[in-house]
Amino acid sequence: MTHAQGWKETLEDLERRRERVAAMGGAERVAKHRAKGKLDARARIAHLLDPGSFQEFGTLVGGEVAADGIVTGSGLVAGTPVMVGAEDFTTLAGTIAPGSNAKRYRLAELAERNKVPLIMLLEGAGFRPTGDHYGRTPTDLLAQARCSGKVPMVTAVLGASAGHGALIAGVSDFSIMSRQGAIFTAGPPVVQESTGEVITKEDLGGPGVAVPSGLIHNVTDTDEEALGEIRRYLSYFPSSAWGYPPALLSDDSTEPRPTPELLDLISRDNRNTYDIRDVLDVVFDTPDWFEVQPEYGTAMVCALAHLGGHPVAVVANQPEVLAGSIDSAAAEKAAHFISVADAFHLPLVFLADNPGMLPGGESERAGVLRSGAKMFVAQTTATTIKLHVTLRKAYGFGSMVMSLIGFDNQTAAYAYPGATMGAMSAAALGLASGAGDDVAARLREMELQASYHSAEHMGFDELIRPEQTREALLISLRRGIFARQEAPVPVTRTAIVP
Image 1 (cartoon, rainbow, N blue to C red):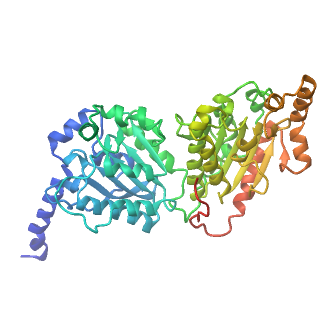
Image 2 (image 1 turned 90 degrees about the vertical axis):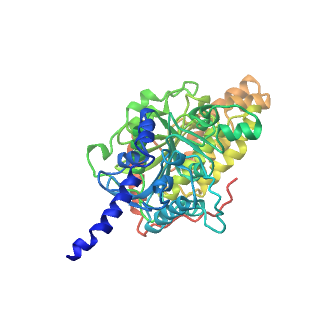
Image 3 (image 1 turned 135 degrees about the vertical axis):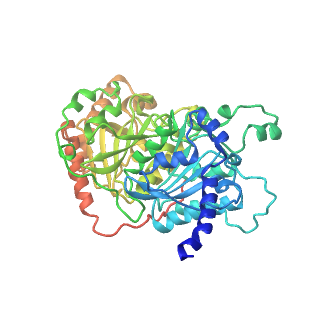
């Protein structure tokens, strides 16, 4: 008997075990799962990763319980290594036991150690009642939290996700959900047992709840679309905070060009609104930029885009909503977005056109000042390149959170001529002071001259014409990029987040 023949029985046994694991919860459960229009855990990983790149670990954890309810391993997304875990709902509802907890911990540990993104695909019912005591077993959340700000963290909720397993969504930089997704502290049966409330999983944590709460950033119709959006999102980021975002190869779309379209898009009259998304289409390389949280805090648009081929993070007021006033949700969204962009060295581009923070009783009860303070701390402690343009107006604290403040480490700050600024608008100041018509008229004239007055005192680097917007930003960005002559490292936070 040859040595190879001696291995035959052992290797056949290994393959039988692997085949059993690959079958997940069995053909019947997998077929039932897919009949709902969802991919199974292994199909999700295959759809997410570059073909043939998946390398699994922990395959035999769980013994007779296939992969212990979670498929884990590494692979490539557009040629870049990532770590990925997918809860398998067909196997004991994707629940977590000591073995699968160890796999989840190892997954995050390897993401941090190897400096690669961590992607979690959720559809599980939380901890499994096994009777085993976890004792001093380290929870996976420890390793996941240590990844924050060091490697990009993305979570997709592709079915019902409850309890411990769901917590990674709140820790992640970016979370996305399919229409069949739902996420909650505890599922409907536990809620009914604990509180007597009878509620469906959709009403408890479906998109109609998870998006307005701010927990879930983006929503897609299908699993496939969600996984495709993860690939798009990651394309703007370096693999870790030890690298800079990858620039695209130069072509015609990355070159400077005038933007005369902005003269027609942006009305000179502050009372007229426009869609800031149309401005982004013109200013950045292509109109296929990626918006984060489009259905939350809609008075602010946060987007990933390319400028001259370089990935940038855009924070822009939306005049179509609340006239651009910054409410609590908009500030919360922007604060998180700014922190993520800064952590991974994406240059920040602020496009300001707002009358300030949203006033009023409802806004105050929603904590607008605290949320605004959170955004202010995020942007003023940001260490990345910062570029600012005041398009028409920026008042009071609403200007400061948009990086319109002196000595704030901007690489460049611009404004359009006639841009109005100050503590408040002339109309609001006139009402607050009880000014007569003649004084109110003078206040309006002073407001219109504010951009020139500010320029005379170096309040901006330059007043620019709308047609110069892209060129001014791109030239300044390239200058800022040139300053990156040292190896990047993770950002050290020095402020307490409000």
